[in-house]
Length: 96
Image (cartoon, rainbow, N blue to C red; front, top):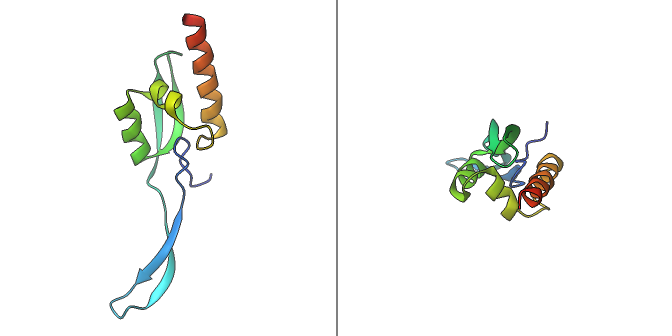
C-alpha cells in the first residue's frame, strides 16, 4: 500500500533532522493517512478511501464527497477515485 492520499495526491516529503549541534541527517515526512468510509449522496452508498487528515477536512468543507470530486483535478486523484468521479457524474446526468 503506497503512502499517498487518494484524493489530494499528497505523499511523503524529505527533509533534515537537525540536532542541537546543527548536524543534519536525511529523514522523511509521511502524510497523516487514515482509512475512512465516505458517503456518496448521489450513489447512496459508502466508499472506502485512504486519505490524509487534511483531505478529510477539505471534503467536509466543500460539502461532501460528491462536491469534492466534482472540483478535484483528475491528475491528483487515484484510479479508484477517478472511477468513482465518473460514476457520480454519470448518475447526476441521468437524474437531471
